[in-house]
Image 1 (tube, rainbow, N blue to C red):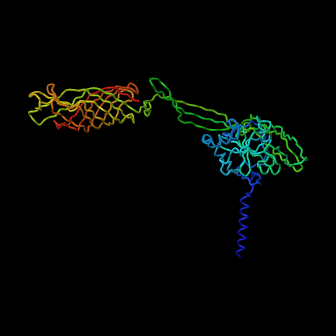
Image 2: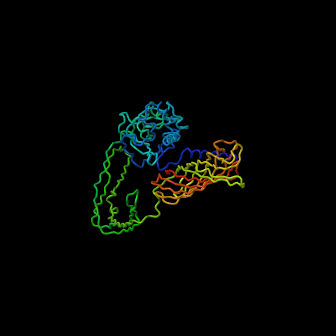
Length: 533
């Protein structure tokens, strides 16, 4: 019983192996593979249900592998191998190169293009009028495929079509044509061998330049010329329904002002479409014809000829394609009403303000009837600000202001003269650096009011106390610290990019000095330039 099971297993293995090595034929007849050549590409499948296309055009319109074209310098087998190993070519022709490598692997080259050497690339010729599959690359559709042709292109040498013969380790070959860089494989029945072992066994010394032989063999075959002609048939249309297309368009025109000039904007509000038909007796003639063809055939005793006549009806003459009669009617109304939803012509993203003016500051009040304080007058103030315009009514930015904080008192400091006032300068300059948000009210071009809220940090330097021109040893020693501000302004913009402005501010400083515990408040009044871009 065990021996019987072993026998059945061996029989099943042999049957499976036979099926795997001999696949069922497809609708597109696959080339014979008597020598064990691997032919898994559609290059080797011949659709013999139709006559091959008699190919007489010049090669090179649709190069399949352009890096192998003669025009690109591929004139020797050494240059051929160098081109396929070039990293630049592999990158520049990535799509074509992957297809070339896959074709080689499906043709028995185990490692693809890496198996090609100068010894495996042979400069040869394919005989003219050889029947086989010719490759092409359609870049528009990104499609690589093969067509069934009788190869007789223009512009090739008298010896035949120049080609490179690529042979794998099993002696099986395919061709790459010089001019176009396209793959070609002859139909085996043409007599052009692509298997070195097969050609040497049948006819030592024979190669790809062998002339094709007839399919019937012997001297019983005759070459005849067959011509097919069919006179066109004219048919006149009867009365037909012809469509009439009517469209009514309703437009609105707005008279607007743009940069001081009047302009008109037209927009389509809606339209009405309708289609009717009417009887037309002036239809065009309908012409039916067949394409004429002429071909030379080899006729033998067992030859069967079948002809399929292709009937053509031009699209432009079909009665169902009559052009419609078209009528388009338009109606337009005009209005000068201002469009409230129309956005401003200004489309700025950034704003810069440069201001200069004077600043006053508050003075401390001592809880001491013997000590008095008074103002030190006004001092120069200047501001630079840059902001991002998120909306015409809102912008966010950063500013820096130069100002002086000072006042006078009659406190008896060391070195001061009794009965005179001292000048206490808490900071000269003191520079508040702040983030601010600004709200705008008004027009983009013209008058515009704004309100500004800010907060940040004050940098203090240059403080001191003087009395009658003498600098005292006592220092105010005011430190930097938190600061916040409020500003109201009025701007006038002449254009989207330039304007003038005026502002009144209130600036609070949280830091105090060593000689006073009060928190100063500055009141700068400034004006300057406004830029938007």
